Image (cartoon, rainbow, N blue to C red; front, side, top):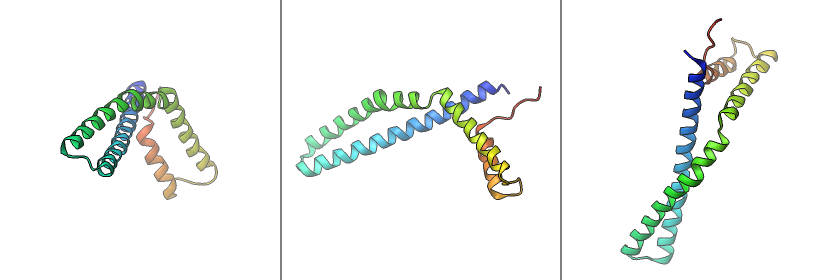
Length: 123
């Protein structure tokens, strides 16, 4: 397997999950604000529906113009690769300080790392 392809796939999934999480957070925040406006202003049925429509459009706009660009900026390929290398060095440091292969912590670190770092092909 090509390691660049697996890195791209990993980065795609990390960005996708982060984007969906950001979209859900923005949607819930706007829904709470909309409910607050409807309850505090005692809006009727028509104005409540209009408030929900405006909230949905605002949520889509915030997702498109704020959340997605922020995810793309914060989770660039270089930053994701650097963070994986930092976790790899953490495993090496843990091994240095005596957390060996028989330790449950070591097994958890190896399993977690195996999900993100593909096996390198022998040359």
